[in-house]
Image (cartoon, rainbow, N blue to C red; front, side, top):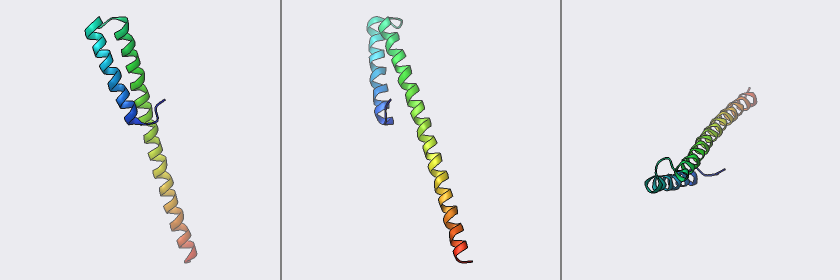
Length: 81
């Protein structure tokens, strides 16, 4: 699995170009075109999963940051009470 969204997007573009070239050379239903299409589907699925994971990490970070702020405020209030 790819670690970088940019690297994955570049690979998606590369495979898309190969698929289109195969379609023009061997036809839209040829085994090579279908294989490239399936490879492209897999890469797109991986990209979507990576985007979901990135968004979940952002949400977790926001939650942890808010908790840290609330804890800091609580400690400040308790120390000045």
